[in-house]
Image (cartoon, rainbow, N blue to C red; front, side, top):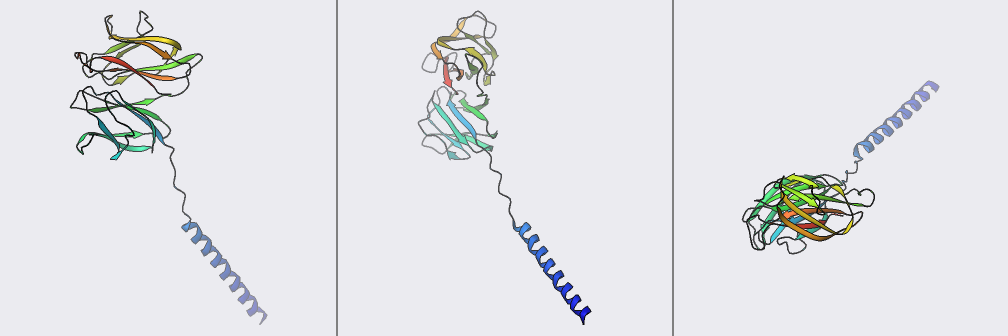
Length: 236
């Protein structure tokens, strides 16, 4: 009788252990890992298409145009979920897609997308932005060529004899470089390796600690509002 009681007790204990193990396994199976949340990328967009119409800019077919997007307009940085994206343009008031291009935007990276080409064409030129702080008393400057009919260009800073940033063809940009801060600084462009100034941007305030893009706009052979010129944007 005693042996029978011991056996019964062992069976009961074993059953309890099996039930506990089953419940534990079930809980583990049902436990869902929280999704990985990526930190956003940041994107600014510039209308640099000479003769181009007012556009609506879209990310994955959703409008992301907080203000009128006309020639020379800059759409300020906005947070964008990192990952594969489709950037597209439609002429304002229509649904006809002018350009649609896939890009991958990385987590916590910043980008500038220039809309360029001579109307009625349009393309995106996407550049990653290094917004790290400049050294010392400097600012940082990058040079981009967004003129569809211009040759490779050099950027001259402050009237110096030698170009500071050189040989950028259409849809190309330099890395950011340190430039001494100044209350008024002159920027000029010349054809690569030549000295004839094609366009000038005078009296640009370059502040210590800030990050800028100097970009070539317009058409070399134009004489109207779309003529060749320089523009500046503050990235940070």
